[in-house]
Amino acid sequence: MKKAIFLDRDGVLISNTDHYYIWKQDQLEYVDGVFRNLQMLTERGFLLFIVSNQGGISKGLYTKDDVMKLHEEMIRIFSKNRIEITEIVYCPHHPEVEKCLCRKPQSLMIDKLIAKYTLSKEGSYLIGDSETDMEAAQKAGIQGIMIKPNRDMHPYISFLVQ
Ligand SMILES: [Mg+2]
Ligand SMILES: [Zn+2]
Image (cartoon, rainbow, N blue to C red; front, side, top):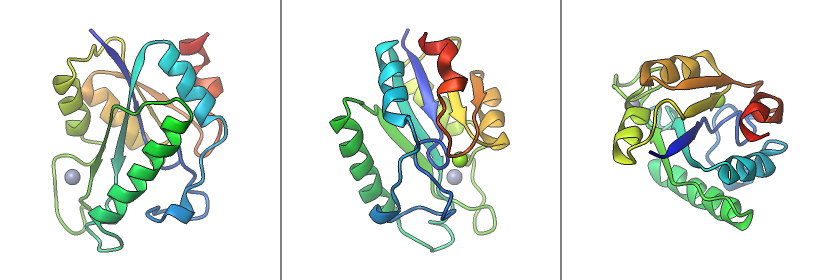
């Protein structure tokens, strides 16, 4: 069975220091060390997935199309750095507007990916910067790795890549 790393997006891969919601290309600022860290995880045989809450869509702040374009650009930059993201999934809902079953801390987005790609739960991890990420990992039956927002994740993943 394949093992995977599920990555939260905002505060983990791209910086949300200056803006909570990120949907424009010029807001794309990659967190320190992210390319090297994802390269090392790839070398260790992990598939990489991004799992993100994008409630700004429900709130009407930006559209699914904006998110799709931003993700295409991220995929392009990652592949330029020899990193393949297998799939990006996001929840477009916000509880103030519409309730759903997918928004983290629910684990549905992760559960679906585990089923779709027949992933090993024992060998898989979610890397996130919030308690809701850790809760989602726990519900999905995988291990959560809590990192400091917008900081190089290396100290937290060194046990996986040494
Ligand atoms: Mg986050
Ligand atoms: Zn949702």
